[in-house]
Length: 300
View 1 (cartoon, helix red, strand yellow):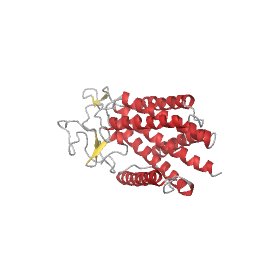
View 2 (tube, rainbow, N blue to C red):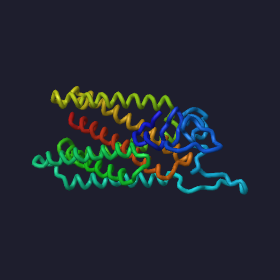
View 3 (cartoon, rainbow, N blue to C red):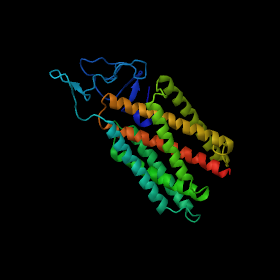
């Protein structure tokens, strides 16, 4: 079973045959393995599961003479995830602010700014796909994705603030932060339990949501108007709320992936993948929040 986030599906945090681990490794001697996963001893989402990375050579080892754990370097820590995520999100914010200031969205230049934003979004998509299929995380690709994604977000945010409602961008940012904090608290308190059933439900719901949105976009392109109406009026509000809920579910899955990696000694480079996944999820939530607030403000 693959991770919820495409950046985890190629390498780190993938789950094959119900077991968690890192792809591309050889089985370690002396340790049990499930399938081709050198670290798995069972399903990490199952109740009472054992350490899926029990034979991980990066994990802290026991000192047989002193009886104390002997730490090894090159293992991912929560500080690594936080610092990489801060760098990635900081890049998004910086380029978003610069594009807001340097790419005017007045009627005379709106078409040009939109063209740049769409081009930046396509480049960000390509970079994210390239990173998703690489065996190792590339900080250059991840930060490049963040930079181009920020250009797209900056132009879209400026246009929404100018033509729909001033202040809606701040509300969307605060709403995204509130969702992040709420999901993190709920996850740490154990109110959200990430297991196989949760994973399957979220992935099925996300696939259905994306199919509906693509269908709506195709109808809008070829038939004109708002397509099937999934992005305006009452249906737009409903699907905006569903999109935010799905984003919150993806955050919970991302937190589980990070927790597994930190707990079981993933290589430090995997912190970049964790930052990449969290950034993609937060961008999703922000865009859905901005769209929902825009509809609500437009109906006033």
